[in-house]
Length: 95
Image (tube, rainbow, N blue to C red):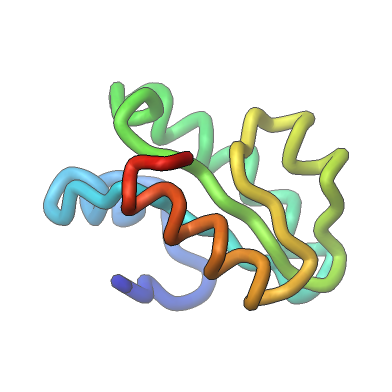
C-alpha cells in the first residue's frame, strides 16, 4: 500500500503509478466534495496511458455503485471488509 495522502495533484498521482506499478489504484472519499476530483485523476491516468494497467477502486461514505459505474471504476465497496475481499481477488488474478 502506498498512501499518497490527501489532495494529491494529478501529476504526482501518475508518477506514483509509474514508479510503483500497482495492480490496484484506490480512491477514498470521506465527503461529497472530495468526489469531484476523482474523475480528473482518472482522466490523468488515462492520458498517461496507465488506465489499462490498473484496476480502479473507490469507497467511502458518500460513494455509490452508480458513481463507480459512471467513471468506469471496477471495484466499489461500501465497507473496508468487502473492499479487502475484492482486492484479494485482483492480486490473486481471480478478479
